[in-house]
Image 1: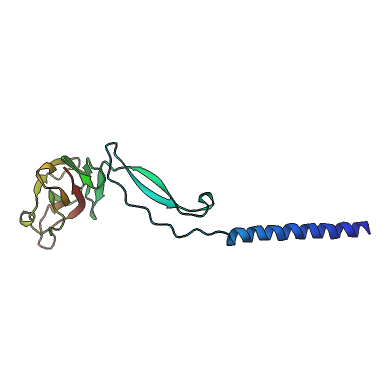
Image 2: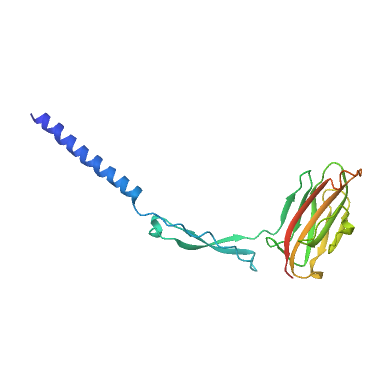
Length: 193
């Protein structure tokens, strides 16, 4: 009889523990829920230490299921690398993310196999690029020999502050009417001098 009683007591204790554990899990699942937090704010401009900040939001048990803002900090990009579709690779520096000022350097990292002259054009962002860069009302046009490692400096202090684009074009070595450029990269920037 004692062994039967131990079995019943063990069963009841196991049942109580199981039911209590189930309700704890269910309570956790149906407990407080986080509201939809706002999206992160826009990044600030880069400061003198080359850092930018923004407010982001989180919600969870540690915030008592309320959206709480916290500051995020990130280093600004001091150079921008871009790759064309046919093998052109360039690096623009110095930058502060999408902002440029003063003298910038455009360096060729790689070139397509059929590369002729490289043309670097800084123009207002809404200017359409034509097949003939001489007809594109650009602010600056610079030319480079088609060699990896070549670079050109562009002085942005001669233009008004605003939105611009940097077009890097590679003429094909053998010109055909069907192909204007063997590769092209367009990078948007904001000039702030």
